Image (tube, rainbow, N blue to C red):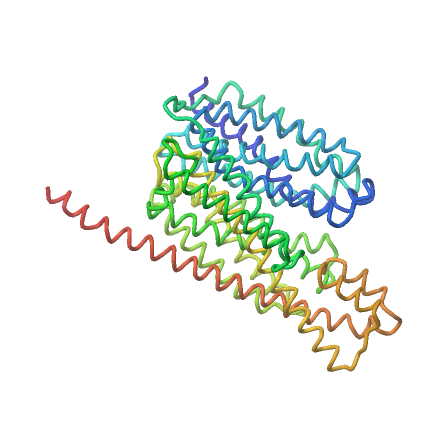
Length: 517
């Protein structure tokens, strides 16, 4: 294996390419859904599962993937994950039914979890301690760019080729990644004295699937619907059993004593905050720009560019500083920017100046950029090097759970405040809707992206009265969702600061005693 400086950069570039396809697939589907719906005659529920199947398995499998890499060797596990991901992508592009496409998305999510967790851990493994933070920052910058560029690529494929190319493109990219990384990546030491806890895995996997499904679908099913209650009850039973088992086995998938390490616990609290903001902060501004401000997709994409640009630019710039001064202050600053971003966006209005909108979106990009790599560096540095795969797996899992929570709670607040505001506006103007128009308005509230199309189907004369009311109602819901993010991120920031400060206070006397000795 090539252990020269050039070899290390081959590792970084090759693994980044293998990993970026996972981040692209995380967001590319958002813009190719119309093509899938047209060609495969997909229902709305089918389209939701095309998106959710990937997120569900990505969230569920990351802890296990990290642990497998630590035990069996990250290089081997990474390559298996990348090969399976590529095969699933190829079949997804060839799919002639929604059932096959959804099945491929499940496989993609599981294989993507392996690729991301083992890939990030291998990057830190190949660089000396003095360079690992910068290398990880570059890795997170490249993969973050994949998440940002996904919707753009999807739109280009749908416009000029076919939605199928959103999956086919993964094949040559993975081949290029393998060609660059294959001979440069060295295997990590295997933990021959430990074995994967298959019984714990059999409890953890269905428990996580049930809980994440409840979070993602509860708003559609109804939070008190029998399906929701059954799902959350099953999830709790499986996960409680998982905790009991893990506390008794020799080689647990997740050692819960790790959360007693203050910095690791603080990083996971941070992951909840950034995950919630990413889940809601990508979804709502896009609707606001296109539905409320009537920006054409091209302009809306340019206005969202500050978020993506800052996520790509900031991590490499602060990598050396984080290595020298520690990542904590950057994470704390990032959390403060998220709180400020939520506060600024809570005051967005249909006619807000473009500069103010860019300011609010830019604050989000600043916060995300400051935490994108430093959080991973902090989490891995809090644990022994042999457990870095597990550290990244846990962090990414909590990150994705935060994203699901943000979408579920924020979406519920959006819909409820939207409905209340619209009902009040209709009552104030004495507008009475027939049964057909009421159904149309309900469809708009549940899917604001279809507002302009659906409101055009209202009875003559009604659309002109309801459209301004709908925009005001949407902004009431948007503001409510952002206030939720404000409170959520503020609580996480306070908790993060308190844990880190308490840990520093404990370390100071011990350090003074050591110096005196």
